[in-house]
Image (cartoon, rainbow, N blue to C red; front, side, top):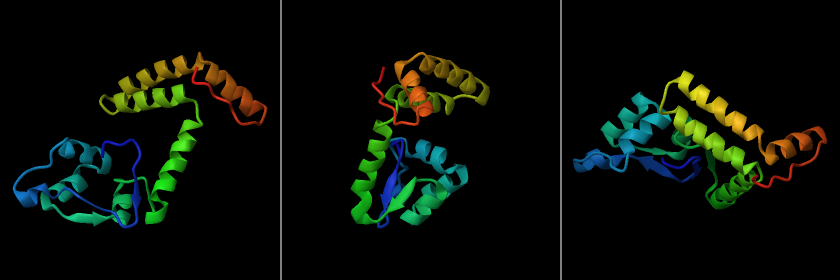
Length: 144
């Protein structure tokens, strides 16, 4: 649950079974799950200790994508490659904005995002990305 993006095998099972042992989820399980799937679904999964399959995890937003078991690693690598081909500084700033924004109100989060947007506009990657778009070619990002 602490990963930015979660890809699951069609054979995967998920659950928070700790209550079946007389304890509660640890390692922020009671904090991360509601943020991913909503309070009601998280409470149901945590209170019952029930397991769910990959398709249900996808339906409730616990995972981003479900793939065949043999495609799990290739799918994860392909997505990682797509992300790595983007402007890395922009990806980092987007991650920062998302994490900050989720811990504050919309107005404050939006103001923080606007400040990071301005920072990204002053980069070489922004100039390269927009030039490549106009020239209808793939951008060659450098992380600067």
